[in-house]
Structure formats: C-alpha cells, structure tokens
Amino acid sequence: MAQYYFLDSSNTQHGPVDESQLTANGVTAATMVWCAGMNDWKPAGEVADLAYIFRPMAQGGYNPNANAGYYSAPQQPGGNVPVYPPSSNLVWAILSTILCCLPLGIVSIVYAAQVDSEWARGNYQEAYRKSRLARNWAIASACSGLVVSIIYMACVFLGAFAGAIGL
Image 1: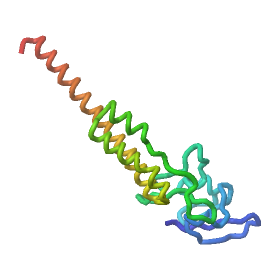
Image 2: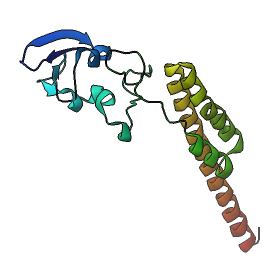
Image 3: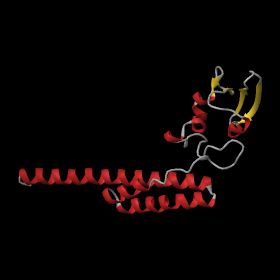
Image 4: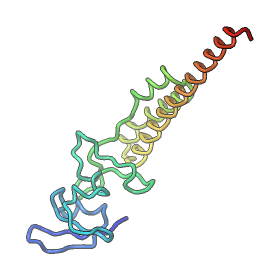
C-alpha cells in the first residue's frame, strides 16, 4: 500500500501514512497529498489511486483496481466500517440469465444473492468480492450469449447460402 504525505490546514507536512489511514487522519478530497512517484502535491480527490476514497456515494466509491486484486471499501473516518454496501448486481445477473446464457447467469445470481447477507454479517470485504464475482459472471454470461448468437447466425447464413447454390 502506498505511503502518502499530506498538508494540514496550516500547511504543516505529516506522514508518511498508509492510504487506508488517510481519512482517519482528517484528509479530505481537498487536502494536498504527495507520495513517491508523484511530480507535485495534488488534492487527494484528484489522485487516481485515491479516487475511490473520495468519490461521492452517488457515483460509487469502489475502485476494483485500487489495490491490485485486494478489494477494499471506503472507510468512515476513525472506523473500520465501510461507508456503504456494494451493488449486488442482481438485476444484471437476472437479465443475463434470461437473455443470454442460463448456466453462467445462474452462477451470477447465486453470488448476487449473497452480497447483502455478507454485508449484514459484517463481512465487508467478502461482500465486495461477491459483488465483483456476480458482475464478472453476468458479463461472462452476456459474452457467451453473444458468441453463441453470432455462431448461430453464421450457421444459418451458410446453410441458406449452401441451399441457394445447390450444395
């Protein structure tokens, strides 16, 4: 996890602080931060690796690429409870099951149905993981449905073409 320095309201430098502890130290989206690899100080809300922490709730605050495979939710200042639950992706799971590929869609529905229960139990990281899996299986279902449709249409076209030329 990256180590950040930040400036308080009197422009006093603090840090280094782990990215997960920035909000616990009073860092807001407007607070100037710097870490190794950055050319200059920037407001924390403009740093791509920190955007998931400071993004408004309406736009979602979950960045699956933030920790290279480890999914964390934005934390409340001074607490260990994430700010809001992840999307269950249940609508996408159901639509991909009905319209695309039944087996893959069912897997997506199973994961989507587990998101809210994991959140209610306090398994926040597991809830985010199940949300990601539900989304990925829904995408796989949609893609496989598209591929099967394309293959089917190609077979129909080739069959009609072969019938037209007398094969």
